Image (cartoon, rainbow, N blue to C red):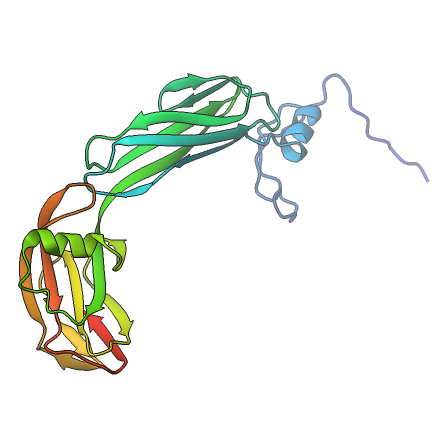
Length: 241
């Protein structure tokens, strides 16, 4: 039986500018655009791995009034191609070591996004880190009726050892175990009026006080302080809506 062996000649034409049809995960549908077999193999099976980049900001979420100074921690790694340049917040960094820190500043009380860029001869990879300014909200119990205290005393109470967290709204659900104590909530006035459910039932007994709160950074703004209608001595689930 005669067989004809196909051999490539100088005029052999290879069309690599078409999608791979064989159903192989990661290859099917890939169009290398190659002009010859060697280029096709390189682009199909030896794909360049881009460099990696990481950027983080210390104290990424901070209170209004906090320092604008930011420490940016960065790192990068070359993969297929050598890294040619690294910039962090617009500042060129040395290629060794592959990690370090860069100081920067936000505008006062302004959310700010910082970036870094790592480039090779054919690639450019970026990473970002954000610093956000937020208000705290508070919840606590006390046997004392603090609703009528002077504003500076209310601020001192909230800046002390009470429950608190950064937030962008008033809605929350809490579990309390008061011991003949009032239940309190405090949050930014801009978050609006609250309604309450206690044990799954509406409760309209909460009392409201608006006051100028000065946080631990010296930043002042209008807050709302809610106090339960009376003291309680049993576990309570309270939802603030």
